[in-house]
Length: 132
Image (cartoon, rainbow, N blue to C red; front, side, top):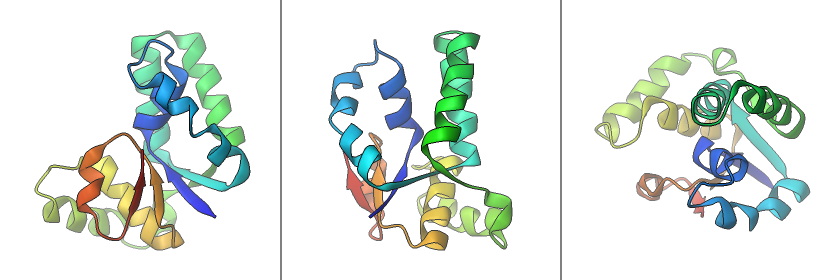
């Protein structure tokens, strides 16, 4: 099965003092036994947050983990990626960030239905099965 993985989950998994860290551990089996995807904007968010909240060394380790664990979707490879993402952004009236809306675009492009995320705003997206 295919899963897209949001930065909120990845950050909680890496950051041991995160309030959702223990909950994030519950989904490790899903990562191990399925095809899991992220996009380039998720990498940006994770590295930025981990670098700012923990340190540069951990951010570099996180970068290696992301590259070795996930299938990475390059948004630039999706025709009209930014325009499609803006359609979702406008539809959800900024309740979802542009990066969150890029997840919807990538999931539709790759026919991925399942999303692992701690962002409950994704419950508003009918085409997504939110796992949290």
